[in-house]
Image (tube, rainbow, N blue to C red):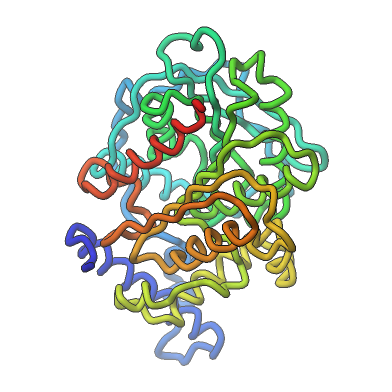
Length: 387
């Protein structure tokens, strides 16, 4: 099926960006002839080279809609970051621009989240930074009476950008909580490269333990808890499910994995999807390799099961999985392969591919029917936690 026409202009910008980044990397490897020297060498400041999105002038500040205001207790602040793990100035600026871009995306193509009751919690993690959780209840003003199902969720962003405060992530958690009647538990894991694997997986596992241990206090039913994530977040979610099986086997009821990357060796990447978009395979391979290098400590980490869950010796005993993939996404092969591997291990798993869709289609609920269908299918999967 052809790519949805809505993506045509975005695709043009993405191709231009990736080609520019590929040429810059090649020039660095081969050296700069005098006539191709970067402007910075001539005394002119250049844009950051590692940006993962087109640079834009930050939009003028516009107050967020009332529905998107956070209802968090004043004592629930973000975990402190020690100086040794602060991002570089260039990376911090890139993340600031990305956050501004995300806010603009929600306003232009997304759907604002409804007002729901939220609380924040800080969870200590042995040997790693504390991790912040935000729990979105499917009610307004106060927590629901009695307990409700819950689902830990991990945001996407190539392990190096994103967070639970990003507007599109926050809006999605609000909508999913309200529509599914499930408490969505956003995990604000540490970003790479300031914190490398396995910090994020250990933070996720500590968050899971915390929710089960404090389920009565939080108003969450410990017999109806799932786990999920988007893209890099789906990698962490799958790894946490695997670690949970290996370490304690708390009764997880669902894995909800959206456009997951489950093999950082790149074995299951489907370059036919990127070629169909007019993006040469070497450029896409370079981008995906950059993601793995940013996240992992060493190249050999790619083969560890908590980095590449599909490479676990056995996938038996994992919770049922619902996997969502997109036709024009090189990671579609990861999702298909993981569903097949889970089934072979005796785990109930389904895989759905959305035709004409791209890796980030889920955020376009304000303009695309396929994104609204994606949301409805996520809600249907979450409702299975009601049992």
